[in-house]
Length: 481
Image (tube, rainbow, N blue to C red):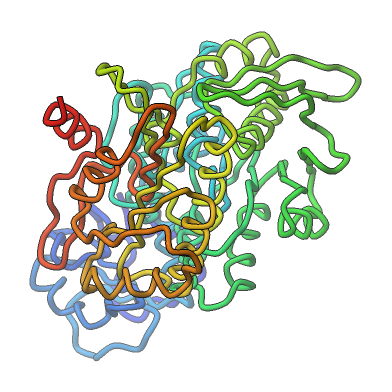
């Protein structure tokens, strides 16, 4: 493709060279550059791509796009732009022939509920006969094809490449989890969404955003890109977002008057039932995942699908069978031990509170929790999670999560700082903590293992190891018998 075509709809200054040259690929990682590529020098938070321009040239780059002044005398095309990240997003879309415009795009943002909501919408649309792509935390999907992902929302270049693959596979809808990082870093810049959902906003990612207001404003960016916004107005920041959004919008809630509401909620360990109220109609809905927060997730998803013209009978059928790995996931227990084990990805104060309050409603015996906090992430949430976990559990095992470069015991110390009760034990090794929880459980108890959910690995200081909690539990239960 000609460089001129790649730079369409972008304001730029041609510092040197000819933009009618042929380009093989776009790259922003100098190590991936090959002969005939254009290199985008992105100024990141840890690394500055401008420092790697010579490396990119050595690897075969024939053009560079930058936002800083660079040295003269380079024997390549040099283009200067005001914002290299946004330019990369538009250029990537141009290079892959704007694939997102050939699908209906649905975005979901919020601290919690993005993954569950994405799976719910995917299930409903597929029940209606559409082919669906999904981009999210657990994995990316093109129909039934599962693709490994490194982050919730990929960088814009990989994103548009994935969109192209979806379009080539005749995908009708793309359902995306849209993280606050991706919005701040303009990974989804220029994408038009037909609908977007705001699930909630609670403390997370302050290591990146620094202030809660920055975090909120990052989330708001999605709704400027959306034709219709679907907002949880029971959430304080959702209500604030709803009032600030000028385009088409619909609200959902349990406790406030909204466009779509739920009442008569009945919860059990395997799911919930509620009455959906929309316009002048009422419908009985069943979910096979419990929790009021999942009723909220369902309301947002139902609203989006009703806007898309999906029949309520189809929606009801899909929601009865949708399953989300690692989200209030009841682990199969074939040993009839009398207690149950639930895995959940809860890794924020709000997420931990939600899962424990939900499980408390149907726990006949003791509620036992196993949790920790990740390293190299927001430290201020650690004592808050310590307090929540021990206050809402009969007993807690505080353990390691993904410590990354931090000392696991130092992270645990931060968690313990918030604990006010003497109903916990520190066991740094996560497998041992799970084992102790299982050994302490008796008939009627429920164990909640929080923090990792769908993950099948643990990130340590010097390596990432295989760690699938389903396998760990199975091994421990076999040892127990």
